[in-house]
Length: 566
Image (tube, rainbow, N blue to C red; front, side, top):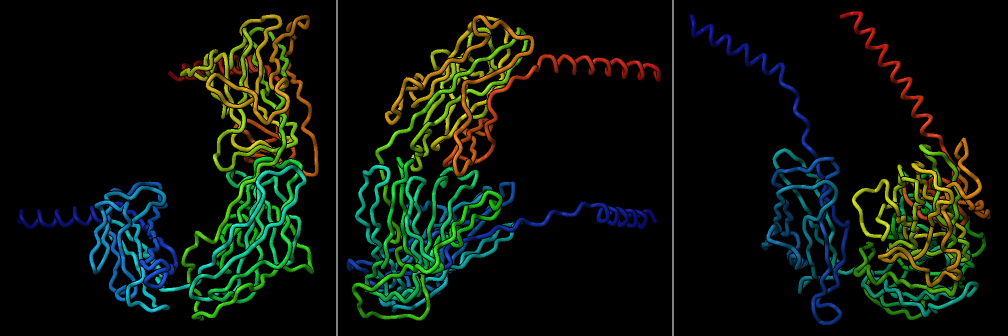
């Protein structure tokens, strides 16, 4: 009987445990990714040796956690026999193994975001035929996870668009014009049905002509500093472009240096129709950026750009489109250096306030142009603002993008209360743009005529120096004065600056120099965002005292009420 009761009790416990156990979370699903297709140069290649093409497979962990279990990835190579030869890329470590049948890779953890699984080098097999195809499929497995496989189509042969470098003049002056000559060839084995010509220019270079088979857009999206100031033109050149033939664009493409041109760039490329960069394929921004989208310009009707054959040559054809054999030679880049200047002017500030009061003021500078300045390739800051705080005042709030330093410019651990601050613009300063960094200062001691300074210029270890392209270094420095002599402390503190409103123009975009700094003006700006509202003062100490008194009263009332129930 006792044994029977024990079995019944055990069964009840099992049933209870099953009913109350929490539901297990679903296994994470990871996405494997690779190119949709690649083309291989037919054996033995242009120089008599097999020419390799690289293919990279990746894994995407879009969860918020690292997957900390061992994962194994496999690529079946059986389908490549007689089509392509495979090698592991030189940089591949011991975590990947290659045999005649498969590639196997092991990962001990999968970090969040995107990471590489394996890089392979493929070349056409010795006896392979043009048009031969095979699939490379990457699969994965791990305890507690699911993987979505990725397949890359491998094909021997394909088109190969090659773009010739145009002869352009790098040094120019505002208003100069020069023609962009576009000549390209199809050096592959397959024809191309339709070519897209893409031209991207920075803010200082304009493309004069407009054609009705081209799309035009200006990228002004916030949060995309590396693309700030770029304009994109994409033109569909219809027709079939044969292997072995050379083509030239039939129609003028005139580049003109704008009045604000300075350090600018040009990128131009040809793609098989449908293979052009997706971010600019339809002239629209990426998903999620629609509110601050690229500004599209309507083309002029009745004017169409085309390409004409210059050197036809018969070659083998394929009706099926294939990947470009060498995409890297589809693109050319060019940098322009326009003779121009940009006058950076520090903005003077005069503040008034009594002991114990806190004031808010904007410290910064403006660019009187005429040039914009952008370090689009290096990404380094254009200018630094060097701020010396007047005696008797203590900084209680610092904007992002600004760092507190010692009086001699050396590093210090505490940002608040520093005697000196360095603030960075970022890598773009638009023409007619104003940068303002909002600080809060507490007046601890009234010192008549207490004076600091605001200086703008090029970064140096000690602070700043005048920019070589700034024509007037005399206005790089301005005074920062608290309670100027003869004015006396005001009962209600105010903060004023000598900055004038930013010049207006046909467009007045705004930008932030840093998340908490504001910048305004015409022309291209770095990140989009808050407009500068000028300097202001706030009687923070009085508000804090009122809040303290109210809070104290509420605390006492609560204590009395609690005591009544004790």
